[in-house]
Length: 115
Image 1 (tube, rainbow, N blue to C red):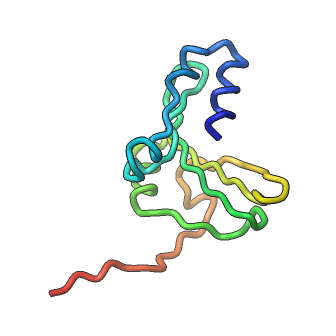
Image 2 (spheres, helix red, strand yellow):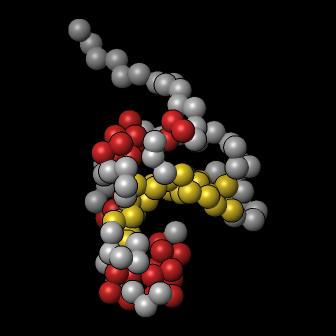
């Protein structure tokens, strides 16, 4: 995904922005609510959360409360890139907030704090 973002910016003559792409989750940890900070051709942020499965495009995936909060707070900038069929013939599509317009969200775990 990083290379795709770099290649896309280089193809439109934005080497300056391609150099500034950051793999946030790898370098800073997984708390930002997105994996990659990239840019559109105008220099605006593209905050990319990548969700990958080996199944087909409709295979369920997990998303954290933090990722949902980032999507809501940065609606114009945040993107979910859904990679599917990854081990055979990878395919991808993009979803933009509000995510509830594209997916059904179901809580499947809860934090239990002792009283």
